[in-house]
Image (tube, rainbow, N blue to C red; front, side, top):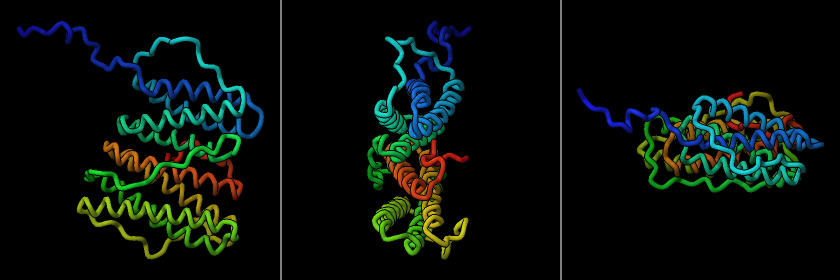
Length: 289
C-alpha cells in the first residue's frame, strides 16, 4: 500500500488564493451604484457601462468560486460626485490594465475589454477627465508567433489595412475641421499595420496584403455617414486586437495589443460623439454584441 502524504490528503484540490478579479468586481458594483445616483448624462452612461463590467466579472468570479477574502476595514463608499466618479474610473482602468499581462487567456481578454471600456468612458466627456491616450503600439521584443497567435496577428493586420483605407475614403466627405483627426487616425493605423507586418515577417510568415477594394456596410454620402464608417473601422480594430490578447500568453504582445485596443476604443468614442451615436462609449470594446 502506498502511503499518501498528509499534506496531499488534506489538500482541497483547488486554488485557495483570493480571486484577483474580486477587487475589480467590487469596485465596478460600488461605482455603478454611485454613478446611477448622480444626475446628468455622465452618471447614467457610466452606470450602464459599469453594470455591464460587473455582470461579466461576476459571472467569471462565480464560475471559479475561489475563497472570498475577509473585509479589511469599512467598505468603500460609492462616488458621490462626477469628480469622484472621474477618479474612480481612472483607478478602475489602471487596475484592469495592470491585470491583463498575468491572467489566463480567457480572463485577459475580458479584463482588457473592461480597461478599454473605462478608457472609452473617459474619452466620452470632459467631466470624466478625458483620460490618457493609450501607450505606444510597438513591435514586442522577442515575441514568438505560431499557430493561432499568428492567425490573430494576421486578422489584426487585415483590420489595420481596412482602417487605413477607410480614413482615406472619408477625408473626401468631412469638413476641414476634421483634417487633423483624420491625419492622426491614418498615421496611427499605418504604424500599427507596419508593426503587424514586421512581427509576421520576423516570424517567417507572409503578411496579408490589403484587399483590392472594401465595401462599406452603408454607403458613404456625407459627413455623418463618413463618421459612422470611421467608428465602425475602429470597432473592427478593437475586435481584432482583442483577438490577439485572447490568443497569446506573451506579455509584450499582450501589452502591444492592449494599447491598440484602447487606442481604437478611444478614437471610436470620439467619432461616435461627433455623429450622435448612443451610447457614445461602448461598455466592453471588442466583445461581440
